[in-house]
Image (tube, rainbow over all chains, first blue to last red; front, side, top):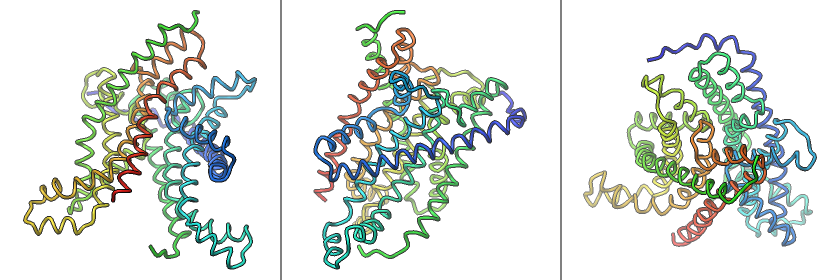
Length: 222
Length: 216
């Protein structure tokens, strides 16, 4: 049995921290792109003209039924074809944003569908404006029903950003590869990388649970 | 340099069988483990529940790519022998499948009302028979649509095996792309093959969801 040696890794602390920050940045960038796509997509699927609805359905199915890794490759090789020169990190943010957007569209659509039409009508009967109906009648329960699915999808996105290393975007997993080539301690490196991902995921899960507990504590009658 | 030919397309298609092999391995070993985890998570013993929960949190808190690397480089460290990539990939996919299916099936078991267990106990059934003949059939109906949905996740997940050099569909795509210098064309075809494999399952999961929920 080989002996484990984590000591050499200490020298690469700075790179590990840098990689972790880039992973967070990539996750947040992709989540931001994806959330915008998701909200716009869900709105369009519910009330857009038919061709738009079909286009969005097609996009959602296409993304959900192909591996994220292949999507990354396609985006990475497609963009230069359109004359867009960009780095691997930006390409990864776009590819992962498109990926997150597809799931987000479904999540937001389901959240909006969960609100009975009669509630909107009740709000209108009270003389609320369209905006007031949306703000006070539709939005709070929709956010609440979207929240669990959205946060777990966010965690999956965080884990999924590790794939960006395969188009050489510099994030945590890529940092792992870099340290591995310097130290040849493959197992130790990836064990540490896994540990960092685990710590990030747990932090976000706790954070989301705390926010959910504070923000959505009004009672519901079922 | 050569251009993309029919032969390349056929080599991509034949690589699909290794994707299928990975899926079969992951399900074959992962499903029994998932059932065990689901039963542990719903058991009366706190120790069993916590062990299963810790395992699930750990596996689901790490990227699948991380799991792959962990077992790929970890096997020689733990066992002292080099393993072919298939073994490491198979173990990683099994662990991944077990944790996600275990959670799905736990949800199915918990969705069956507790009175059903009590009613079965009143009939004098042993705990295993209560599960086997009363709870499991009902839980199966609830858990089937998300299980089929997970199959899609699993098929997509096998693409990561390419990263440790295991030649399945995604890796075959990389090889063909490197030989032909037509990455866009090749990866689009690879994506189309995955799509053709996954879409029927997605549609099946959706129709099951409508059918089984409607019948409840």
